Length: 351
Image (cartoon, rainbow, N blue to C red; front, side, top):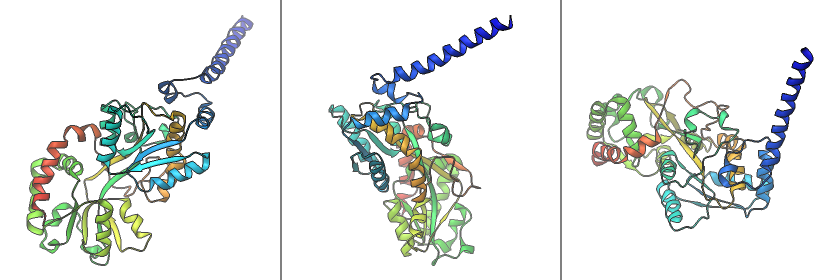
């Protein structure tokens, strides 16, 4: 009886081993883009490398200027030619959408803010990807549909000039900004309607709008375009206290000796910056190779550049302050409302 049981077990094990081997063999046959993107066989990396050798390179549309450095490192490592085009988030989304409608399929990977890539998902432009490295990421970096993935976390923080403002004088909350000492001292990035709308949801819309309307009317809030520009104005002292920069903006300038420091006023809002593979990517093997690269070596490179990687291997800034992630789908659905709320409450009152 024991011999029979052993024989059955041995047969079962041999069958399973045969199936595993068959999976590798089957995976070596030509696959569609959809099949390749979700392939989880143990030879995934080898398959991507072999397929990339037969493709023409990699084409990327992106919004992060610093992504150029990482793309160059990727190209050197795998001897792959990388071409890119960079613009603002809306322009990148518009180009991807218009090219698809014109049956022009030149781009493999798009890097953009989560709401814009969520919009591309709704337009059915993106490809679901299952990477073995998803388990290493924050849960907020991976939507259920898996048609984009977060590579960094954009955390909206305040930033102040350390030569203009003493640490003991810093506000501990947004309510503290009603103090007359902040008159003429404040600045804000003019396109932060998603940050504002989501934050009003946390604070209570009526109470939050009243507070910011009073701050803007009483002390003034200068309106600037661009988080990097606003942070540079903080470092120069032109805007002593900015309310909305990304947490990595001050860190990048501090390396150069700028007198600027980040400040985590609560509620602290965040959203992922993402990459996505196009459904009709002309170089799918190379696209997936880069996708995996961004979730592994690329995470360390982003960290070294003072960005906030989505990998759980790296500590988040302000670890003791809770992050409130903005739902990208909600940001799209509430866009018109949040835009009007931000304009009416802050921008039109800006001085």
